[in-house]
Length: 334
Image 1 (spheres, helix red, strand yellow):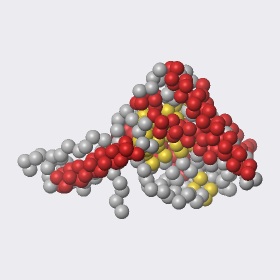
Image 2 (cartoon, rainbow, N blue to C red):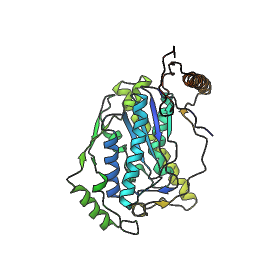
Image 3 (tube, rainbow, N blue to C red):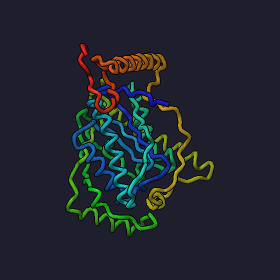
Image 4 (cartoon, rainbow, N blue to C red):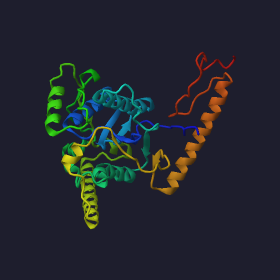
């Protein structure tokens, strides 16, 4: 079955969710958090997107960002996945590894209300998964602290210190693929002592996602922040109460950090892939029809291109692969 087409927009808000196939590759230790932050900083070194929020969940991550160009948006998540794979291979001294699902979830968020819901969901995700009772306690990397404390300005930036480590600098794990606190501390010190690491600070813009929806007033930004914080805390309390009713606890922090690297994991049954988030039914149907028309135009462009005609592809789409030796586009007179 062929893949569904991608249609991206510039200056739009996206949620990006890469998922592993069937493993939990790197538990949130001090060592892996250092590596993951470096990967994110290295990937974002040329500002592929305007990064707003992120939470890493080991087998997947949630990132909210504003697109700059369609090609940079796709390069962002492709490079992030590749560098993560390279780091896992280095830690485990593996020659090859197929880590990720074939297709990354990339969802355009169509309205302000939808975007607020997604920010709440992103920061509630560790609690939803019973990995902790509160995002405040979560040992994995996230932008929560930066979001809570930064200046309420549409152009506010938070610089997160990060160093990228070439794979040659990443130490090997013990043979049992787990790290005790003492081993974790030793590997972390070994990383920090590297003279080959490259500084790549992460530039976070916690309020930039509101600009495409026309929200820029500092007072309104602060109101949005407090609304989101309250909603996250409300969700976390509800999750804790639900666990208590069935005598279930969240995973202890120490146990979470000492999980086995590449621990087998059975993902939930795959749902239908989506490409936009829109709660308003009428708007959603209109957007879906526009998408179908764009895809129909892409198919016609492909047919004409194979016939040797010059074509203009619809904005936000990607020119498909053509066989080696095929010159594209050909002059219309050919």
